[in-house]
Length: 151
Image 1 (cartoon, rainbow, N blue to C red):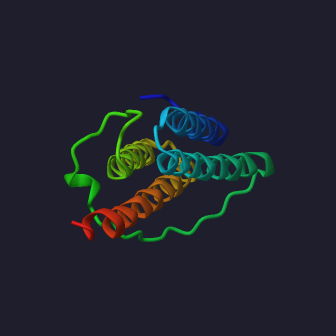
Image 2: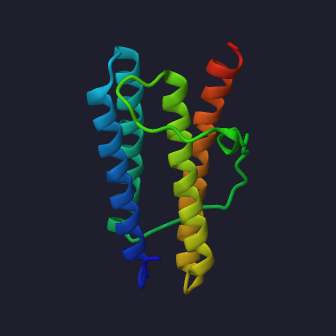
């Protein structure tokens, strides 16, 4: 696991991770065969751009405030089989892919919070984990409303 020495190291890592997510979702939008899927991935990419901007602002301003909050977990992603990115994937498969990616990001930040060398770093990781948890919840709600309820 990567070793972080400063808050800037953490933020640089998180900013880079958000950019990777932007690139991934934009690539998925390019290869999508339907306009609906293209729009879904463009929306995901735009959300990740917003997260990257927020993290960059925290880094540039040198201030960081977050209150720990409890985020509901529907645990839908826990029961989904992993999906590989494909140009012809369905909306439900795209949501599963997004849930799995957000869950992996949550687990990473949660694990890093346990390894943090000081309280400030720990709090940054916890806040990043919470943000990823919110993203996963959003995709789980979408899946529940538009996939599970239709079946």
